[in-house]
Image (cartoon, rainbow, N blue to C red; front, top):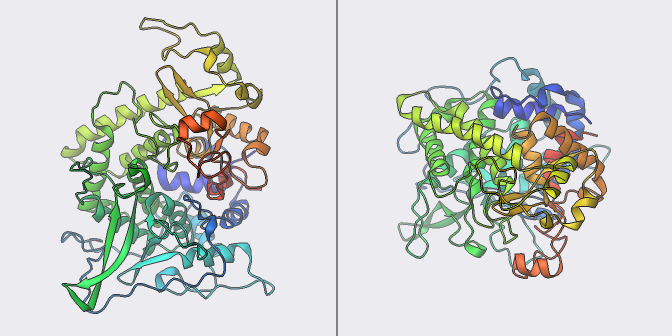
Length: 519
């Protein structure tokens, strides 16, 4: 196994000054990365973070949302009277020497014959031998999903299923769903849509939303938003575009989008590193947005652990699946967001306390996850021998885990070579399920150690038929079945065994797998 250039590129984008050494040890070159991206392209938006497998190739192009001359929509580069670029150019060369040639070469490799999304042209895609290649087809589908606000690209819809009469909220732009699309646009050199997305979602952060007379914490990012065309000042002859965000008050189950702000910080860092345009992250409103998210995440509470305590359904798995507490996915994103924020926060007196708290949390969080979430054959044997009901400061079984909790499937699943980070840890409870996004992102973001990263990949390779198989990639393993499914999911018909969030296949996760298995 080896780590492809994609991992190096993304690590350079996000964490160039961090201690993430895993990606530095392995380099297969740009050609293999290009092949891995072709694999990624096959599912990049047809199968997205919210079951985008519904998309079809024969759907009609989305109509660009147009604004009349009288449109009063606030442009992303004019938020609260702040200047966006401070006189700096938008079209960009990469800063520094590391990976500069790779990113430039990649842009040349991926540049299609047609114009970019920013121009609104979705038809100019070349063909190979009279048939479109996988990559061209993927870009076609991705461009068809672009949403426009006042004539400018602002994001991509979650899914489009022309055969379904009930679209629910799949026609909205989801923060988490746009991340793989945004990374793809950045790698192709189409920066405007990512910049617009970052700045317009920032505007939505300050909206005060309530549910049953209660408002969430300041700094919460919406789960999604929709562009609506409404009459201007009550005049039906003149319309304007408005953004309508959903912070969870309309979502199924009223789930809170804890991961949205974390993904936003990560994408902001990726934008700055990939484009070389640091003016966006240096803006006063963007700096304020970063601080608001950090203060919300770092706020003192009742919890004794450095991990984020969240409710069920607060991340990619946004339905009841028994992940309430301290799910791995949130912790991996939290760690990456803290690293990215530390690189972007402007050094000033007002940020000193925040940066100090950030650094302290990084140390505590990384130790907690690496020490207590890790499971391999050696650790499994230790748990079998745990003493329980230990009352002392130096207890070995700190969380009072009972050996009888170890499920029977784990003994067969755990290979002699390899290991992984468990899904959740709480007092007297370990969730031994393998969650793909949490483990993969722990490698990408550097939360897992180098040895742990290799061990996770060893396990994925060893258990390829269970985790990947013919329809990649399982969101978690194993699925909840029978009485366990009824109790934990509440008999959720969407999350029956091996479907949707309950062990379902999500090809969108391939954009992370392709970092490590380019062939």
